[in-house]
Image 1 (cartoon, rainbow, N blue to C red):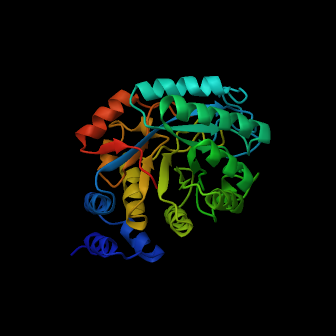
Image 2: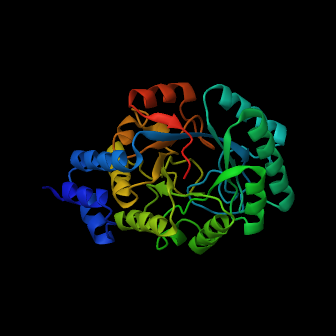
Length: 323
């Protein structure tokens, strides 16, 4: 048996692989690695597939200096700048997405966090979206407090998103206005409030293979079952504008190894999918089983209609998957 086949068998029998094993696995032949990852996905997740659409609820002027982000006030980009949208505006986009087949809707805002008044406005939007469309709603609102997360849960929020972005070791090379530990603290606050967590990272920002694996192990330790995989789309005006874009094969390799480490997670192909010629089809055959559809925050994506057709062709059962 090959190394990938041996490890896949052990994972499917309940074994948690180590960092050393993941490092060795990372360099195994790609097609077999991806095939075994997809077997693990079928064993633990069957054909369930989670799709969400998102709205950029507050754009630009962010106080944080994340090197990859077009919305940081520290960088000179062409990103839009506008304050928190009204509940009417957030509801309008939700109605549109619901009418085109969406089942899950994410409200994302720029900035380190929201004020209490802004959280109240998001809560109002969530209540109206739940009542008028039936969509499940998640939020990505920065570094909030447990009390704020409890208010959001009471309003009907079903999941909180907060990316670790990269490993704890490499995080200071990506952002210095907040710490990896701040991310972890916010995730734990949301968990204490009774909310499941969506957390992953961005690849192609200069991190090592070891950093990629360390982040997956951190997610496993935190009990995260919903993991966005973002590929850097270098944006003019950011410090990473000249970074080389990861190839499809490298992204498939990352996804496959993440499936070995996080066998029962929703591994979500997110930002950067628009750079892939096949819209991510081969990634969905390499262990991924969730996606963001439609436009991202500051970059274009694919239409919900065309995505739904592809997911059906791949044999997935699309819906909101409870963590």
